[in-house]
Length: 337
Ligand code: TRP
Image (cartoon, rainbow, N blue to C red):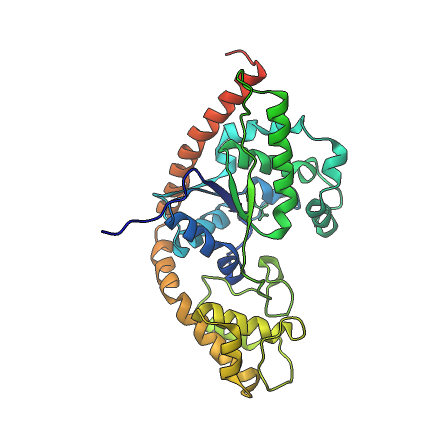
């Protein structure tokens, strides 16, 4: 008989903004981890952060399409809606209501010091800073605390937001303890991915918005074209040395991740083959690795109604949890009925 190990009492929540297709950076940075956590038996919530899209732009462009496609990428990557609650946070009223008391627990000075928000304001496509941009980390605290998440798989840029959520949880517990002195909220912990960062084909950070990413749903030809155009250098000897040869090393790393091998071994085998051979190897490795995922993705893509049903079921499940949390919050605050 085989037994599966479980992660008792871990409640995991993480999510993404629906602004475009997920790419290989997401896959090796976080998606793979989420599927592992799910398969180890953690209680999983994955959210589509649709309200967060309007933090740095006036209108969420093609929101329904991006939202459905995000669900499609999740399912293709191996998230199972029977075991993982997949939902859009705009569809859970109780979650959103938590933002109100939470806003009272942070100062304007604290909000203005958040380095990720500062960076986003600097890169925003808007001329002014909206109230939502300024306060969305508190909304993210509502995401996390509505389901009392304990573990949050995220990238380094999200750590300041986790700190806001932890502060909100701590202050809420101090200000509004249960009659027996215990607090309503656990402090969510970040779970940082160990996968080193993959660069985009231009040598910059791989990003949905920079046109330098290989999306999970790209065709094999598109993948080949993107990798063929990737920035490299003139040294024919292939090495794995991220500090001095970031572009070549990123392709070596991508190959290694897809082949589940060491990047050093991959580089050694390529030897003096030059960038063209490296790119051919990388293309083959990526296309081979993604083939089953892409096949699944194409099947799932044919049934948009199913994708919407996953979101509806997820919103119901997340809603039950968030309503219980909100009821507890209102009770300790002394709100009547
Ligand atoms: N801010 C995250 C991003 O931009 C998305 C997000 C929203 C999130 N709510 C979250 C991530 C809660 C983790 C937990 O990618």
